[in-house]
Image (cartoon, rainbow, N blue to C red; front, side, top):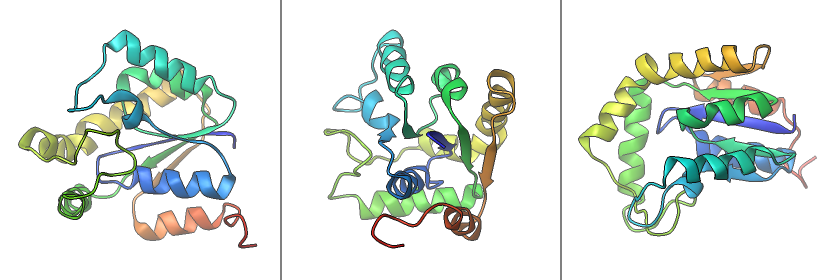
Length: 174
């Protein structure tokens, strides 16, 4: 595995899992949020973001986390593995709320400078609707653009731990 794409709802644990996978496999980590958002939560032009993602996906090795359905066509054909973080919507909502509280004073490492953790009703609605709206689109797009791409679906913390146990141990912990 040289290019691993990790997707899922907000609060699903994508960034945490991506950090651990990148560490264990000694691969570069790409948080797409850091490449998308500008200070103050300003979105880039579509063409600008697609160009950035095209360049990132063209790299020979990576662990990349982030949804951004409009760029799946650039990432899925290059990926060796798709990991879908898919806990329940209640678990995702609880994690989003906890993250907002715990990160109220310190920025998240997977977000760019000038984008403090925020929470609003449309975001919470997105988290709630992810299993019904976004998950099916991601899986259908993967089947269409990358037939045969292995998909690992992780629904529980135990499944995450079991899957991580199949990867090499972190460097220095043989």
